[in-house]
View 1: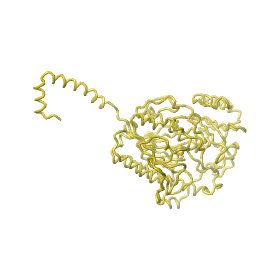
View 2: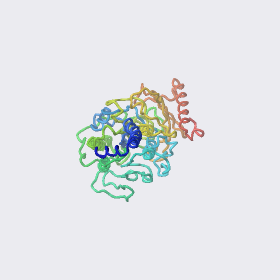
View 3: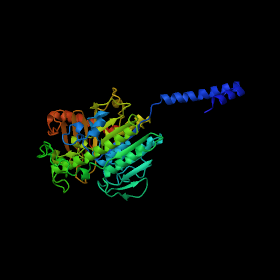
View 4: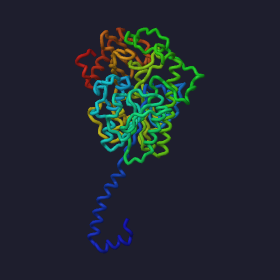
Length: 476
């Protein structure tokens, strides 16, 4: 900086020339300063994703067994969507939908098979953020072939396939896979997330923290070995079911409790499921504490969700894939203090495909036309906005593990229509207002034939809107 003496001497030596130069300099600087002052800050993003967490596996959602104080705090400081769903209830396809903002029939990841993967050339929202000046980091479970290692990250710490709860094998920044002995996977992923957040950042960042839990088989952290041992988990009403009114495609799904060595009883399975989620909640708390210590709270949008829901004893099932509520409902929480009123709850139907356009919108990055989801920003801001009144579900992995036949359907605020579309074709219809537990299949009742026809037409419209390539070859 010029001293007062040097400044005055230059003014006297240069005379009018100095005044003119100084004026030009001031005119050049002022707009830039004004623009910097007026420009909104681009938020950092931390995106938590669990594996197989159902929507009510949170104490803030009314769960009487599982305690999730840290995730509950996120919800109290942001917005919780009580009607959040996945468009395909299967890990790989759903994760691809989160990343691309597209339905499975568009991005092409229809199953968990290794041949069904996101191509390295397929754009995901992280690519667009990075191109626009974000630092992007991936930590955890990619759950598709390639494990995300065929993409460009500013930091990467991830594992292939399902991974392990204990002694994980993980690669860091293009290095070789390495086994970490005596480590619990989700604790270690959180350690790396904290290290990344504490780094100096010249740019806004987007950090993916994709946990292993609560995927089968539910191996507890050592500190939780005895958690829930003196407690009885309430049984769902349909645990001991006769499957009355259900089609064969539903009854014959191979995911019944007691038929598998690692799912021997409802009580053990449910307690283990809740125990691994307890560790997730603790690790979310550790990240939130770091964000606070680094004074990043106001400038960081935190998203918490899951790749699909999960049956927890309903109809004696575990797993997912079917279009019934326990399988398709997911937690969806967003906290961003600069935008969201704390303690907000919304009932709008939001989907996994909405995350990609939402984060781009919040970052000020144009949402590409090929994304099929909708930005949730108007909902986050509590503005009036036109929103969806129905959405399309699809499931393609058959024949495969758990033997759930291919199906698609449409869900509205009130109705659910399900079509098992390969021969022998079967159907389900539920009035979700009168029958939220989906116990009374109304399909085939003449009284509801007009409703079925309307829902069939709506499903065809949704398939057409999302450019379903199978529409020309299959009956709706």
